[in-house]
Image (tube, rainbow, N blue to C red):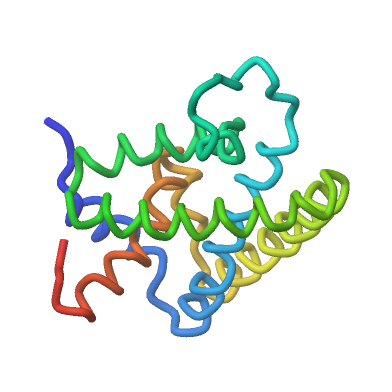
Length: 161
């Protein structure tokens, strides 16, 4: 039987109790998400291009593919979560498109620096927490981290998940 979103959040939350670690996660998880999509957008992707859908072309890269697959993961957990993550993913894609306009090297270096810095922050947070990151137990927790934060936003706004 598949886990419910609440089961995922409860299990993820077990290693995210320390207030300092939580603050670090609120900063680093979105940055890691952004940097991964940015790094993936830098991988050559000419063969993904299609004709006739010009508005999609700036987002048709490996980062966009990973977002689409991630959204499939979220939609099976919760419609509200899917919509929240789709909105966040759109913001990520738009910001990556803007940075890509400055050149792929700018996006690559920026994404790499943000990625490394954010992971250092994550491990500092978990050192403070005194618990290993959840993804050491199950790689799917890499998908749950951003959703866990979105879950707080959805609850706070009264939408729920």
